[in-house]
Image 1: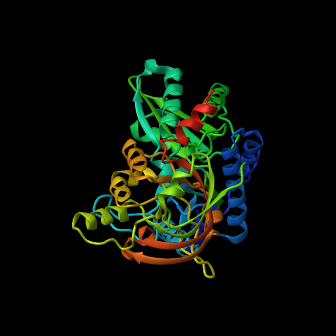
Image 2: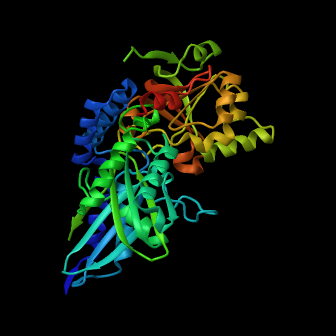
Length: 279
Length: 184
């Protein structure tokens, strides 16, 4: 059993919260440059240029890409032979508090959904834990903005709807989302599992880097087809018309019950924030 | 892209009527921040017949909840939030003389109708370009609802603040027309 210090977790999470908010991924920067070269709309080009300039300012000055610094969604992969001195969930929350306070990140969490006030430190985090072989601890922080999260949906489809039904649902969801999730977006799709698990799959899909296809060639083809169809919708940057509506589409699948066919779409903004560390 | 049009707040009917969808505009002067939580309080004041924390005539409201300012900065990153959440409150403010709104995303039929009736424009700012946009904000003063934190009403002094006309006083809607133009 390998021992990991409580404060090692706190400091790592704080760093990830700041880094994810300050530094746009190189994969996103590259795909934005490609999109700018292909964009036909003058307004669209202007907006894509602004996003690239914005990323440069955020990186140089170490300030957030977006004022919505997100809900701190944390994926914890806990090695079965690793142990943290103290409660690891508490350590993660202390890390979020430290990162959002010391990093001048916006605090956007309300303590109770109906009666609550702003908690003032962006806690609690949402923590998804999995136990994995080995003695390492991998932590991924994926701050999630509200505007794009609101354009997400779970649908309990019929098995007979099949892959065509999935495609229609995704296209319909993106069409209805229109300008709201700050296009160009990144689209996470979950297929299978149960009602709650399919939403997790769609969220997990958003951790992939741009261009990273599903290892199953069948789903990789569906990802490519959906991306092309979405970009033919004409929604464009910020929904003001253009060729660049999504930067990528990622599908994650899981076995399902014979009676069920759950499908989830989790919409992300261009920033697609996620940073990881292995301790 | 055509040269941006420069405008100064407060805006007159003539100022807003000259703007058309797709116009690139640079705003200079005072503008006011408010998100839906602050809008709700403004509407409560109006219903009680009390005066608003700022004179709304000819003004622009920016839908934003900025990030905290680092030392040496007047404001943290400050990009637009989704305007639709303010839709239920907007027609009343337009009837009181509000001339412009800055945000992201489409507006309801009711808001678009009220914009045509009361002569007002809706500007789109680039969501996710918050660090860049903040460079055009020169001074900040909280004028109401400090308890709302990022959602407090702030008076911003802006210079050449970059926006695009998304809905004009003539019924034009760039979301609709732009999408139609590029749909395959």
